[in-house]
Length: 269
Image (cartoon, rainbow, N blue to C red; front, top):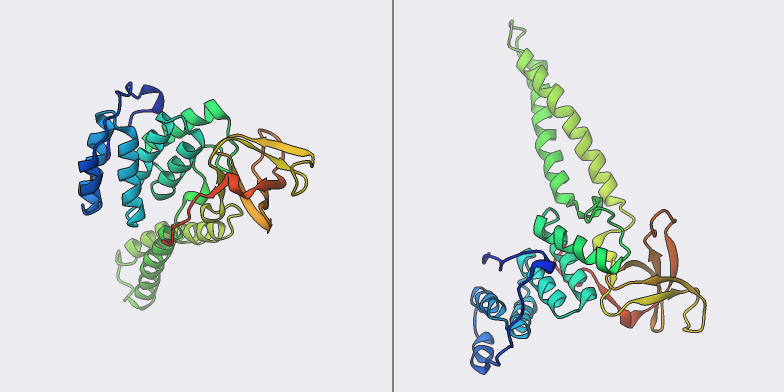
């Protein structure tokens, strides 16, 4: 994976110099490999060519080569262009692939303080970011180890000192096995999985009581806010809205043109 561009918090981004058009770079981008495109985008970004960097990063995404550093850098670019909804969307996509990336978490918190977007992840990440395969692998590994240890313990000769290591091993791994199974069940029953979320990607909008602009407003949704779609009717999406501070989660109708899927890609998270 190519090395990411400098990942300072958005508020620490340097001033942008006037962007210079580069037809030559654009022509090369269409035939370059992803590593070359990434390097070219980073070079353009450092030189102040934010729009050029954005186009080259997006061309990598169109090739199906999305990565956490790439999504993070797109978030930085959208922030610098003043698109807080798009910046939030790309930071969320970066965290979907790498949930413990400190630079992305820091940048997302910065945008959250500025816009106050509503999210199902009060700390930036949640159980939704845990990958089922992590726990599946843990269950398989610990399950086989505990099973073999139990069989060995049952059939091994009762020699002094031979059984204690197996007993200790079983005692240590059994809680890990039980915990992994429990975590797998919890993640599988997650009410707000990342793959189902939609994000207000442009200007802020309102959630309405009915699929009509004239209907009463339930709550304002700042740029970057999330919803879980439950029903679609024409150009409207009815969905679950994250709780606002101490309030309970709400439901309302949002114009579909205001929303983008958090994870619209074929690859599973």
